[in-house]
View 1 (cartoon, rainbow, N blue to C red):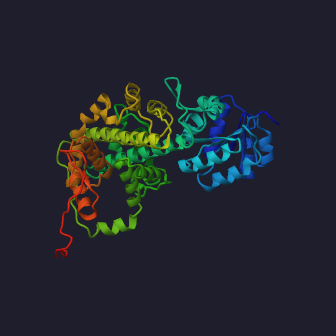
View 2: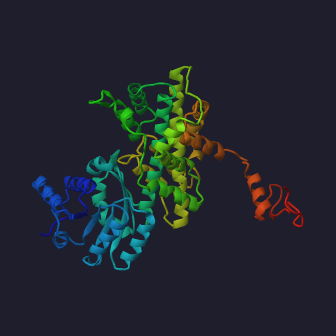
View 3: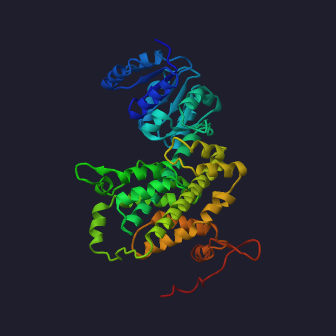
Length: 475
């Protein structure tokens, strides 16, 4: 029977939670999944709600009002193409397909072109917030044609998270823009998670604070300038005791962090674009090296290094770590918006950074109080080259760079790896350096490859004959 406002293909956890969110906000939802048992279970559990599941594709499509609005919640990659192949021949001109998974933006660009040629609308949509966010309000990043956005706008604005009454969704840009912004969101997420892990490590291993003590520290941080979802859940994690072992659960979890690839995609694209995002790159590397568990255990028995030993004022050092984490997180945000700026120009996305910061304030994994300052920075200057050049944001980092230096110095002296914090400080120092040693690097390139160089004292491009070509190599 017709009457469904929205269709959802893929009734896993995220698909189900979004369906319930839409239904709670007044929309009739039809769902489709190939798993008969899952479909039957959904129909049994939600029999009293405007949610109906189907395992027959024809019945599912017949239940949707036209133009059909269908959101795919399936794993990225080939599964999306399989679903599109199943659906495209059954849809009619003007219908809308939405990919709500973590698809690579280049796949979204390809699918958009194919479906637009058939008269079908396609929106690649980043959704952030996990299953809880999907149910109660995620941040949503849709990219595609504007007319397609208008078809789904009422639904997305209703189900998105709200901050100060504003929905955490906006039109991002054409083609793959939505998935690109979600990719960068995840890159920033990698960086901040790694920075938090390093703050935990230097205070736990380096200073000797227990998980219980760190639960208090992170709870206090979350009540002040570091207020954010990731700091909040870190405090919760550190306070959880395993009932069976009677120990903090975090101490029992294997030190191996996995990844699905979205952070890596951001690093790869940044290299292609020539955008510097060292803290994001380092966070990806840190997850990779965490997987070398057996190698690390073996290396710990043969490679020498200092044993951490802190003898100073613990409260003062905790404050330095707080300052370092806040400043380094701002550097990670600056790097993320820097690659967005570069990509917007390269790919013709026409991104609006204040709007992106606004929708990241709620629902998503990197939501944080400081995003209001970031939004204000881009409202004041939409052409801002780098967030660090905003007087307020840059000033907050400048006021805390000494904290970064003290923590980095202690970590280096005591053999505690803090690669993300090191890279954030180096990014800050590199960006504020009027002169870098790249002059020597370029001279080396000219020496061995005749790549030329420019001079500081006059215009033009130059090459020096650094060695006599008729002379044999020096030994």
